[in-house]
Amino acid sequence: MGKRDDLIERYAADLRDKCGMTPDMDLLTKVTIGCGPAIYDADAATIAATQPGELETVKNNFLIRKLALPDSPDLMDAIHKVIDIYGKSERNKYRAVVYYMLTKHFGKEAIYG
Image (cartoon, rainbow, N blue to C red; front, side, top):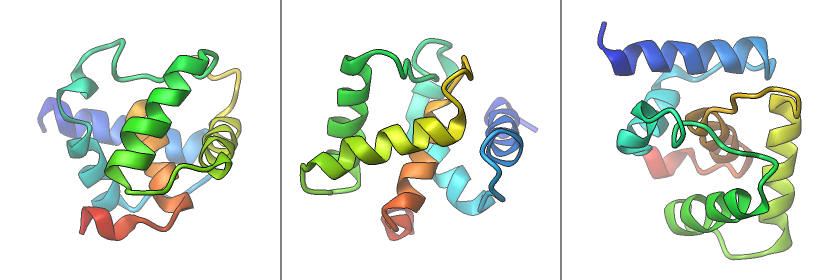
């Protein structure tokens, strides 16, 4: 297995163990690939959930640009909900896992079809 496959397995374990969900491996793989080279950079691979600027970046770059959602307070509410599910005390919140959960939350799986 390659490095990306190892990371996808790590993300799947987080979804199972920390978020209490059974991951759709096909979707998780596509979301991970969609993150591009960021998954290989220790800083870019995680989301600093306590930094408002980071959450704005997730909202603007992922929810609005990638998922084509209209800007509304619901977007930030969804981000906070996903962070709560992941666990506020969880230090490493992987970008691919957060993006996966947001994709599922908004029912936008077809974007990765």
